[in-house]
Length: 507
Image (cartoon, rainbow, N blue to C red; front, side, top):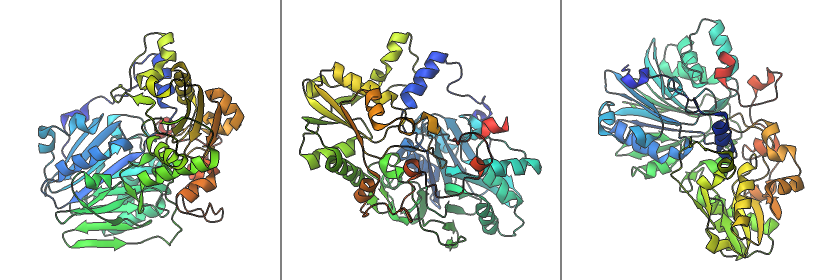
C-alpha cells in the first residue's frame, strides 16, 4: 500500500481555531438543513480507472463536500490519495491521477455522520488482510457499529479511524471462511443499518447493498467495464450506460471471470430512503426507476393541491426547492420567479467580524431579488425544515425586500424524529417540528402561513395510493418514527436517541 506524504499530515478539523461566535454562525447557517450523506464509485478493468473515478466523484460532490479519496490497484500494488476538501481541489491535477495507476479503482466523497472530519477517517479505508489488501467505500450508517466496535476492541482489535466503516474491515479480517467473498458476506451478516458498499481487492470489485435497500447503488458500464456508484448522474458525466439498480441485499462481484451475484439474506420488503427524492440525489438522477426532478415537481404540485392560498408569485428557496416550486407553479398557474439569488461561492468557514453582521449572515448565501417580489404576495417553497433558523431569516429578507405577504410551504412532511442511517439531523429536541405546533412554527419563522406536504400526499406524489402503515414503501422514519431496522446502539444507551459519534464514544 502506497502511503503518500499527505496521508501523514495532521488530522485537521476545519472548525479548529474558530471563535465561539464563528462556530455558532456556521452551525446556524449550515445546521438548518439536511446534510449530505456520502457518495461511492468503483470501476473494474479500465485503463483510465482513477481518472474516470475522479470524474464520477465530481458528479457526486453534492453528496459530501468534506473530503474525497481514491484507491487504485495496478496489478502489484495498491495506491491511495485522500484529501480533505472538494474533489476538484485534488483530483483535477494530472500529477495526482498519475499517482493512481491501474485498471481498478474505488472512490468516495464524504460528509461525516460518524467520526470526526479528520484525514484518517477519509475513505476509501484500506487494510492489509491475510488474503491481501481490501479497500472499502461506504455510504450509509451502521446502527450497531458502536456495539460491534466495542466488541472488536475488547477482543484486541486496534482501530485506526473513528468511523463505523472500519468495523467492516475488521469483521472481514476475523472471518474463518476460506474464500474472500464468503468472508465478506460473513461481515455483512453481522452489521445492521444502511449501507451501499463498493470494495476493491487485488482481483475483484465488489458491491453490496443493505437488505432493505435504504441506500442507493447502481450498476453501469463504460467500454465494457462495470461501474458501481451511488447515482446515475455519475454515469452520465462519463458517458457510461446505466444497466440496473443493485437489488436490496445483493452482493455483486466482478473479476477476470466476469460477474458473480450472491443473495445471502432472506427477502425483505424494500424500504429505500425517501430523502433521496426529497433532497439528497441530484435532480438529473434516476433513483429506483423514478426521475428525481419529476418526483420533486410532483411534490410541489401536491403541495398546491393541499395548501394553496391566493398569491402573486411562487419563489423557490434555492437550490433544492427549485423543482418543487416549478411543480407548484405549473399546477396552481401562479408565475414562478427567482425571488432569491444564491451565492455559490461562499466559503463554509467564513468568519463574521461583528454580532450585527452575524445576525444577517444568511445574506452571504442568499440575496433577495427585489424586482421579482416587491409589493407582491409570495409563497416560498423549500424541500424541508429542520431547525427553522434559516427559514426565519429568509422570510425576514423577503419582507425587507418589500414582499406584501410571505407564505411558506415545505415539500416534505414535518421532520419529527432523528435519523440513524447517514443523515445528519439534530436530536429530537433540536427539530423544530418535534417541539412546536404548526402555529408556533409559523410565528417563529414569521410567515403569514405555513404548511407541509402531508404523509399521504408525499406517497401519492410518488405514485402510491397513500402510506400503508403496515407496509410502508419507503424509509420515512424521520416523519413517522417507523425505523426499518434494529437500532442496537440506541437501545444500549440511556441518552436521548442521537446520531452517534464513534469518536466521542471511543475517546
